[in-house]
Length: 227
Image 1 (cartoon, rainbow, N blue to C red):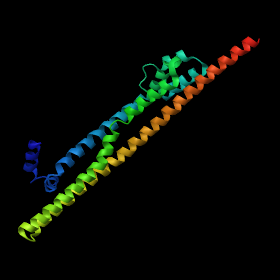
Image 2 (tube, rainbow, N blue to C red):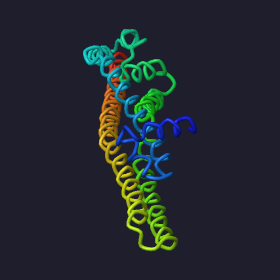
Image 3 (tube, rainbow, N blue to C red):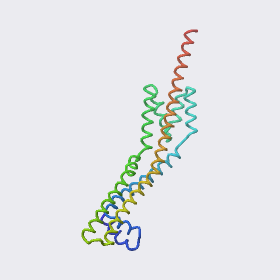
Image 4 (cartoon, helix red, strand yellow):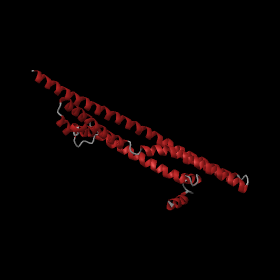
């Protein structure tokens, strides 16, 4: 951190952005850290969702549904095995715990997939709240610096404007980070909700189909006894 600060000071005379950062005061360092975390998380989630999109297999999902509906649970399990599609992974776990608790296994597998998809969303939510608060703290310290300059050197325009500038820069930086993070946060949250809906729909279909199979077998058995 000290080496980074020294480097920024050396380049402040040639880079207006670095000069603006230095004028923002000490609070700019935690704001910088928060911005780095936000950028890293956003990039990681973009790459993760792009990878997940390539792993989706909607045609295979339909084939598995067809197998379950026809009663060929073994073939349905074979088709969904080793798939990287989250819906198929959930269905495989459910089908392989069919005799224990199908619905419970589907719920557990669905929860794992949702947890993977919502990873780092709490971090982004925290940044959206924390960044403006850090900017507000910079505002307070900047105004305090301006009043301190007035008490020490009177109404010196340079000293007063330095404190006010520090306050405004920190506030703008904090708000900017929060706004930039808010858009991808809402986007990723909507993706998670969409995935959750897909998982719940698929799980409900599997449960309904398997229940129908059980009723059909019971009905066939009753007909045999009646005959």
